[in-house]
Amino acid sequence: MLTISCPWCGPRAEAEFSFGGEPAIRPVPAAAVSDAQWADYLYLRTNPKGRSTELWCHACGCGQWFRMDRSTVTHEIFATSRLSA
Amino acid sequence: MHYSGLQLLKQGLFGNTRWAQAWRSPQPQKTYDAIVIGGGAHGLAAAYYLSTVHKVKRIAVLERGWIGGGNTGRNTTIVRSNYFFAESAAMYDLSLRLYEGLTQELNYNIMLSQRGVLNLAHTEHDMELMTRSVNAMQLNGIDVDLLTARDVQREVPLLNFAPDARFPIHGGFVQRRGGVARHDAVAWAYARGASARGVDIIQNCEVLGFRRDGARIIGVDTSAGPIAAGAVGMSVAGHSGVLAAMAGFRLPITSYALQAMVSEPLKPILDTVVMSTGTGMYVSQSDKGELVFGAGLDLYPSYAQRGNLPTEQTIVAGMLEMFPSFRRLKLLRQWAGIVDVCWDYSPIIGPTPAPGLFMNCGWGTGGFKASPVGGWLLAHSMATGRHHDLSAPFDLGRFSSGRLVDEAAGAGIAH
Image (cartoon, rainbow over all chains, first blue to last red; front, side):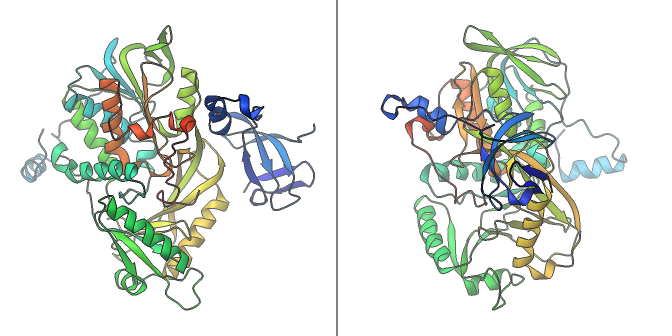
C-alpha cells in the first residue's frame, strides 16, 4: 500500500485515491479541430516508462484533483501539488 | 529432432543427455528481410508464419530478455473466442483454431486442454445481457451455450450457492472449446519451429532505436549493434509506447500491471475455467494442482512487474466470495505482467505512422489467447505491406474515424 500525500489532506492510503490520466489541453474551437487532432487529444497517450506527471483525484477523501510526479517503474512519488501551484 | 514417444524412450536410455537444442542461439546478421521485435509468443508466432506462410527468407526475432519471459510467461493461460462483435469473433476464433492444430503442426505438446470456459451471471440483468451476448456469439459462429443456475451448479458444485451469497448465481454461459494451454510451451514450440526453418532468435538483444532513410524505417539499433531490415514488426505488449516513442509517434495505449497468482497445489477439484464479471476474477486448476487465478487491473499505469497489495486483496476476496471452500489455502506465488490496454479493449494491428514499421499491440489483458492470430496477422502485414481482411478493422485509424470495436464486456475482466 502506497502512502500518497494529498496537497489538501496530507498523507493518506493509496486506496483513497484514483488515477485520472495524463494532463492534456482540449483543443478549441471545436469547429476548427480536425478528426486527427481530436483523436490525438482524446485517445493518444505518451504512456511514459519512468518519470511521469499525472492527474490524480482524492476520490474517497476531499474529492480534489491534484498533480503527481512519480515513477511508473519504481512507483516512487516525487511530489504532489495543487493544480493552481 | 522429431519429438515422439519412441524418441522419449530412446533418450531415456541415454539418461536424457542427448536431446538436441530446441532452438539455435546465433549471432545477429547485418541484414534481414524481416525483423520482429519481441520474443514472446506473438513475436515468435509472427516469425514462424513469416517463414511458413509468406516464404520470407531471412528473419530475426530480437528479444531484450529471454523468450517467453514477459507476458507469455505471466498470464493465466486461458484460451477462448467468446467475443461480442463479428470482427473480434472471426479473429479470436482463428486463433483458437490455430491453437487446436498447434501441437501437431509444431510437433511440440502445448498441452491444450479444452476443458471449457464458464462465465457466471450474478443478477437477472446480467442474465439478460448474457443472453444477448450468447445470441451474438452464436450468430458469429462461436459455439457457446447458455446455462441455468442449476446447470452451473451441476458443472461447478464448489461455487457459492448459499442463499446469502454476496454474488448469487443466476446462470452463465460456457464455451466448450475454450480452456487452457501451457503458456511457456507455446513460446518454445514457435521458437523451435521457427529456428528449424532458419529464423534467428536473438536473446539478450535490446532495441535502442530505429534506423531511418527519410521517414522510412530501415532497421534497428540494438545492444548488439545496428541491424538493417526490409520490414520491422513490433510485438512488445506493455512496452509498445516505449518503442512508439523511439519511432516518433504515440499510441492510444496505457500500460498497467495485471496480477496473477497461484495457490498451493491441491488434488483435482476444478475441471473447467470459471470467470465472473461480478468479482472480475477467473480461476482454473493447473495440471500441477495449483489454482491459477487473477482479476482486474491495478488502478494506475505501471511498468513494475509485480502489482500492488490493495488489488491483490480484491482479487483474493473475489475468489473467496465465489469459492468459500478455498479459504484455507495458502498463496504460493504472486506476480504481474505489464499489459497494453487500448480504449476499446481491442488490439491494434497493421502499419504504423512510421513507414516500414508494423505493429501488433493493444491486446491488453487478453493477449495469450490471441498469440497465434497476432503472429499470423503481423506476419501478413509485414510480408505484404497490407492488412489481412481480419486485421483491417483493428487498424490504428479507427481512433480518428471513430469505428471502435468496443469489447469492454468481451474482454471479461474489470477495467
